[in-house]
Length: 225
Image 1: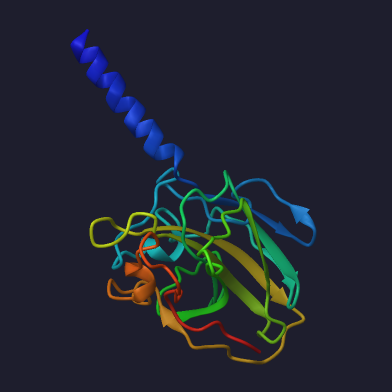
Image 2 (image 1 turned 180 degrees about the vertical axis):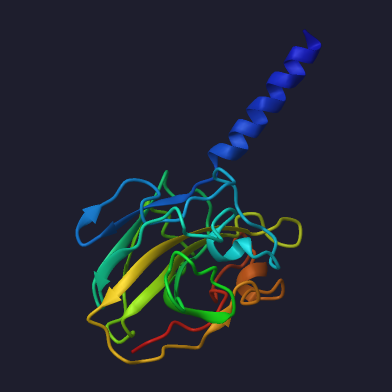
């Protein structure tokens, strides 16, 4: 019975930890909310975060290096798309959205190189340092980007367990889109992922429980047309 009690306690602790995790899995485009993982690359780590700043999994999550099993949706430049999670964001931290133009098709692109530019940051609101912990996030695609196929990467950086005692967690997902009706602007600055985030970034090391009066979202500045 003692062994059973220990196993039960361990399972409950694991279940509690997993229940605090979440995953981006659905994309709404052209006014249609699509089934999970139709246009968002399916990950292989259930709903676990990525924590290694040097890992290629930071790009499109574990198992997301290939989009061969994912469809690509055509969307007009300047239109909006919406990412939906399996449950509302559970941990405090910023939301960011990046884009990277594929050399050929989005499905064949692994997101390597200094190709990522940021199109949205959602940081905390002050005073109070409150966060947008929603289940859906909508972003407008830049009107000026050239036509072609892109990865659109959304990221929730969970900083609820302050560094260095704890390790920030990246919850990421990549959608595959084909931009139509675009422009000719090469947006930037562009960064490589991994490489865009460092353990010394103030937005990575921030303690949201102690004198939290300002915040800088990690990564490059948001690109503008």
